[in-house]
Length: 528
Image: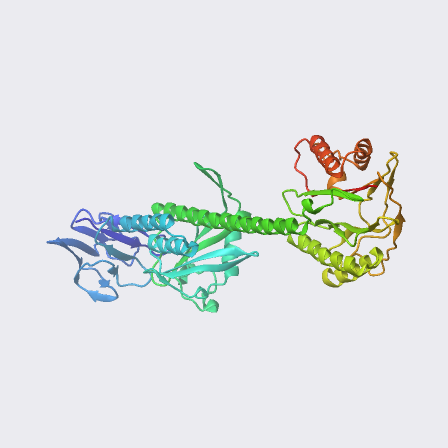
């Protein structure tokens, strides 16, 4: 059987020695197998001999004798964990370990348990708990805590005690500010002893009695390739620490223990980084779901192109192509009797679900104003009040509203929207410029109606800035001039044909460059 003594010298780090040969001599004399460098120890103080499968420690006729677990004895059959002292205070202490490999095997089992937990657990706290349990075993500590940096301060995430039992998160009793200070001052393994001779802080004021503390910083990791993990090593990149302490014995900090602790710290850091990436991915998926919902809302708000008139005194065609993100574009054409159509095109500021929902609000207001034949400028004023009350100026909307009459001029108002183009059958073109500012910006804003006479063969082209500001690589924009030239050139084409021509020309211009805004068009033709 192989055995060891864990030697705890006064004022120095503990170490281990094998009990060999046997008899194993202990004392102040250099001839001993274990030399006690304490003048109060006898030259030949004690010896360890074998009796069958047992090891027995005996007093070798020393001046102060030996004590086993605090009891003075002449001889004693050694058992695991027995502590041997030499009759004087603050001197050597020896802890008996019957199996020389037990410490290493225990640590190996702890690391294997962490690996097993990493492979089989879906709970981050379960994995971090296994890491803390392993750190307690490796250092032979009584308690272990994992603390994370939150808003520049340390907060306890996991609290454990020896034996794999949980502790309350507030059981640390050591101010996190003290640990944070130590963390800022040192980036390597931190070791502190809180015994009478090596007191780093006033433990009495902290109401704790600790003999040793071990802290290991958790360093931010970055997965670069499957075969490589980068560790960001500056103290500014620490994300927390592993903390172990003991009230009864000094922590074991052999070189192997230090290496294992550093490995554990990296594993914990990697787990936390994976958790951060998973949370990031979860939020990304949630955002994608919200965008899909918003895109569905937008599609449902837009009119069915098949319902647009393709014959009669007014024909029309429209389209709206959303980008990767949803926006707040809306357009519609509603018959308000045999000789009148009401039209609307709007663009809500920003993107996302909120803009799509505000565009939905406009649909209700438009349908109501059509039924009651409310003048366009009055509709703008009512929308302005509503948006200011609900969005407090954080959202605004550009909008063009018009009523096209068969035998009378078109009545319209433009609230800061892109100027529609009126293409005359003769090839002349006019812009229907804004008659007021966007709605939802200022309470005192006012709008007025305008009139425009449409004759047979005239084309009215409404669009949003996703058309005029469509851009290609380098930032060049499609522009109103190019749009107008194309509309004039093909003014004899049907609304559906002209809409497709404009869409194709924009696609050729942008050359596949992703766009940031909706491409929305409404083309209307006055007929005989």
